[in-house]
Length: 495
Image 1 (cartoon, helix red, strand yellow):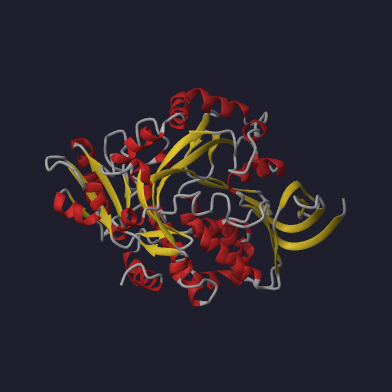
Image 2 (cartoon, rainbow, N blue to C red; image 1 turned 60 degrees about the horizontal axis):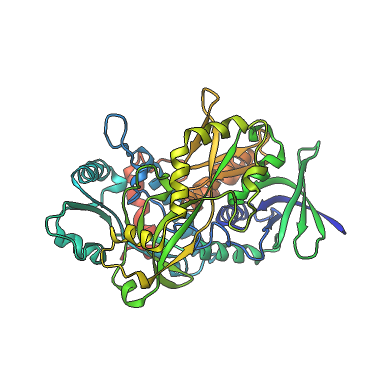
């Protein structure tokens, strides 16, 4: 099999939103950089980034109750919601800049205004939501949040959800009007299309990593195999980014960098109930999030979502989690087994032993019948008709397993950046909030791996792309007041 060799400054592994965002940022910071993106499938944005494979909310902390869990004293902790909201504002700023430069088309092609609503029932849950509202709305990031326990008001906010409910039911909801629905698949395809128009960018589809080795000069030789022809090409790269979703962990392990030691992965599959009946879809325009069932992973918070995927509206309910051994939707059932190493065996065993309830829950989700799933849906949409809803397979998620301070294994629900000490390689592991905070996550890659260039001219350009860069939106209310109206207007999220 013939082997070719090419030299590049940056090699992006994976054709999802993370690689597309990092490539876009780097090309803006230094247009002379030679970038190559390698994707194992025959098109970009077809794994976790695809509209049908991810939650698509534009996670901003507005409605996701798992981002404001209660502490041991029963008090709502809003710190994570504040961080996620500020990070999502970074994404909005970047997209606004890319619209202005023509790198993205009209906002309707990838983002649409969709109110974000949290909905609960029962005395205990209502008390929780009320406390959550009081704490969040007191902060400038959430000052526009509305709260109601009034049935008539809630019927206006979400008619399908309130349909056929008894007037005596104790219910409550919060709402942010300018929430969004983001089609990250469309966003990514547009970003890659813009990159592809540049002379210094190359896209290699149907290419997967066969081997990667670091040379003595610090650069990486990455051998890519063409899945169609069987031929190989070796890319010599000064920097490698592993943005392959669930596939990032095996690639990180293959790199052999010391920072990869001890990491494992816990794969979780997902399914949606989907309704595309036009009359039903027209009667619901919101993302309505509830509380996760006891024993469910945080990523399984139930929600009834208005979605616009590839320009077509639909309603999705779920996700229904499931047990899997695949790391990618198009991956192998041997992925989990192949990821086991001597350095992560004990942490993975710890997680397996200490999370048997979670495993049983996931297996139980897989064994549900259609009517079982419909019963869960009817808690949010009492009038749902079984015949209007079909089951669709969502993407794979690989939650992080790592050592805690005692050297024991723990399961992490979030994202984590792992970078080589010399800054020549970085990988993003984990899931939610994922795509929604891609801009902030990729800025952190630049800070970790391109610090010298950041301090030598890149910082000012980054501040042009993301006006809040270098300051805290959590702490600076005046900064938010200057920035948010512009992003909401430019992205047509608020009149």
